[in-house]
Length: 72
Image (cartoon, rainbow, N blue to C red; front, side, top):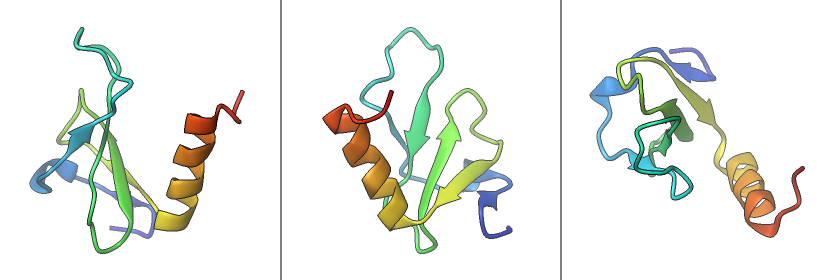
């Protein structure tokens, strides 16, 4: 693993699908809480694929901006 990715995220457990993802099986983002190196994020269609790893502070700021409608 380098500093920003987890090559095979399927071995991690506890993934949570984004509340903005529908039940149609389309594009879904999954997030894993309580990982020691940051916040892993992956595409639910490829659970065996890579996950991007974000530092907790910037991820929290990103989520806050989304909730507040501050992003275009």
